[in-house]
Length: 142
Picture (cartoon, rainbow, N blue to C red):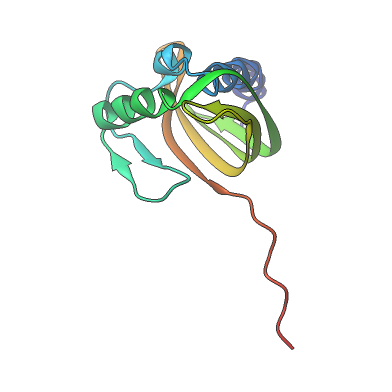
């Protein structure tokens, strides 16, 4: 892993955090700028299912952002990340409080997240996102 790739990716992750904040406020435009436009892309959303193909994934993100209303917030807790040879990833948690269209109360989202990025030219592009709810483990049965 070259230190320049890692340093560049860490800087990019600050932008990625801002992109997530815009998204939970209903604005998919910043995310649209970092989503892959060519090659393979996949999305495994927190509600289940999967989406494949750059155009399908991009349109799904755009559609899903419309469920959010202004006023939410989001932050990432990064457990690990790496970048090398045009590929990068991060794994951790996304903690968000959002307002959904038609619901007056704030809704908390605590997600386990894995994202993978590919270098396209001078930019990192999101090629895979897997997010699912962070739930407490079931109590052990005796």
